[in-house]
Image (tube, rainbow, N blue to C red):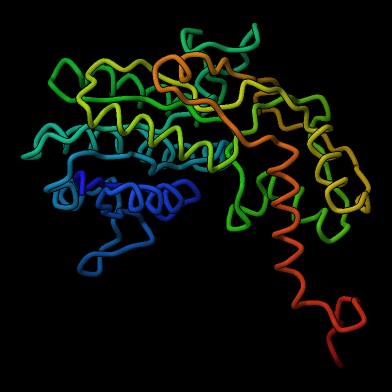
Length: 314
């Protein structure tokens, strides 16, 4: 075993997949998440004593715990700020005080750039977030960089539109399109030309593992790194991919875009290739098609032998 790693936010989309990969890579894994409890208390990153106890004996902390979506941040800005900023401060304080002085790997977001003027966006692009979630992640990043002067080994991964599981939030755009396409339901687009860098979960986890290995080897000054594809896709193109994967049964309709969303982002992936030897491998067409098939398989028990969806009896 190469040491035990604490994962905050361990029960989320990325946390579950990362925990499995760490285990098979020879690491011990210690989960920490609001969905878990210790002595009847939720494992909250806003509870410093619980976090300190959980980190004892760990060589690293992967800090995924967050109010992790733009829309949640808009709805509960105070909770978003406290969780994402003070939670990160607690993780860093824990690392500084722990016996083994674990490194801290922060999962950040493309939202820190806001609406960048030039695409693709490099990691050196100035941070200019346009919503509460993005501002909280930028503040968390600043805490991570500042902690280095106090002897904490830190790194920052900037993620972009991670997808790839039927267990994801149903209203996120990729699982939403895939699930509805599997049932032949309409796909509603909030901004047909809005453009993003969609990254499959397996690629995201591979990138995080690459960063973990570098940190475990002792790297002290890793710069922020994109874990993404570098390939732009509009929401209109994404809807067409999902619909095609299910036999083009889903009509595509347009809805007004949300005012707090970034409309265009694609990242430059070259730093990850240079420093980690990492590049994304899963093509969006393949990832979306697989997700549509998985949603279709989940829906099979709902169908009768005639292939029709059952109706409730009176």
